[in-house]
Length: 278
Length: 278
Image 1 (cartoon, chains in turn yellow, blue):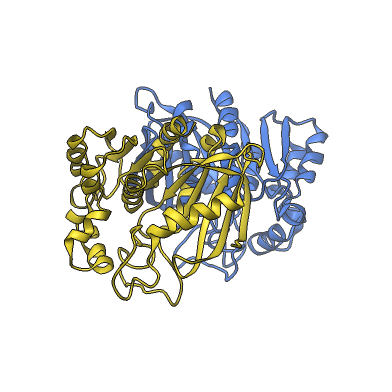
Image 2 (cartoon, rainbow over the protein chains, first blue to last red):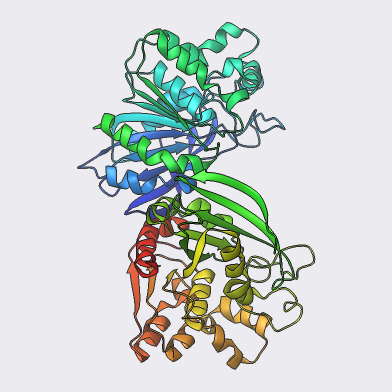
């Protein structure tokens, strides 16, 4: 499996690099970014945090705006940021920002015209880690985090593959997509009208069933304009009570939905993951 | 003098806010961003670091990409980031990125059609600080920093107004604009063909004349694609020898011209300024 390096920049003693490659899952060209801390080498491979971004984002938003790389360099953690959907001229799309390209929702689509390329769940859980572990000085020890749609992705993927990840965190996740407009629109399009099939990609539904003890840290700003209609952390908090799951949801007063919020707490998330990745 | 708040986001316990206002110097609407650390209040006003950005940037690039706000919050320093030129439909422009809007070069233009709006030197040295000190809980104690074209701006403005600033720093500054294509093109357009008049805006020329003891810190990546043709730190190093000026130029191995470079060393620049702002 070959990958093509399209950019590199030294940062905080480590390296930020972008790659493209032919993706089998996505049936086309995919792009991702990786941060390698200064201590990453074949002799001393490092663990990986996968970061899943939100609606409209690419692999670039987190790397440029989160201010995460200094702490990741200190802690010796690699970070991998994939794109948020398949892309390209032949890939189905929608005129709105919350469906189609930039809005893959980290699931495997079953409906036309989406199913041909929109297989982000398989890409994130299987294909991408295989590529990362083959090409870079990293171990197979990993955690997962994300923002908004990517927070939904991190929690669902972490819960469904709890033996593959050490810890999960999220900023402002879409906590109950079955119960909000963004999720209902996307799940209807990608998964069809059988609401029962949606439960496999709903963080709150999955948490009710979860038997794992995977630690989960969630930060949510209480001045987030999407809080009430789209994000619904209360559903996650309720679901966590069913089996007394180790979920900490922190409401952060005054913070909104932006990367300014993420940058304020990302160091704490990295420290949380570092503890579990050690 | 009224200013209009157009955005605000809580970050690192403080606030990032953007404002527009009618600028007398620029003869039109100007925009700036300010970061206020958590401890800034009328009772405990804080010093200000002015940040000048490079070609094509607005007030947003530094605030979003430098990863500076955590350390500024810790140190109790406000940061003000103006736009890099006058803007708008009635403002003269050029098809290229290195002249006109987004490329004001922090000088007062004397030539048509630029002189009507391109008075960034007056804006940065006089009008903007007056607005900031009138509207925000800050002191008149200030330092100045910038990147590339903004590094040129920070050094020239700091040296020409050494009693108004406590310290100067720059990343990858255009150190000798009279001797490089970017500078020669901009100075010809904005200042005309009299090369003698260019010296008032050339960091290396000004440093040769400087009698101040203002401390200057410069970081320059040695993998910067603009290093040899455009940036010329060697001119600055030579000029610093004339009066043994307190200039430290650090070549940083492997770093390029991007915000990944800035984010790697911004904490050290903030600590440098904090020492002199105290």
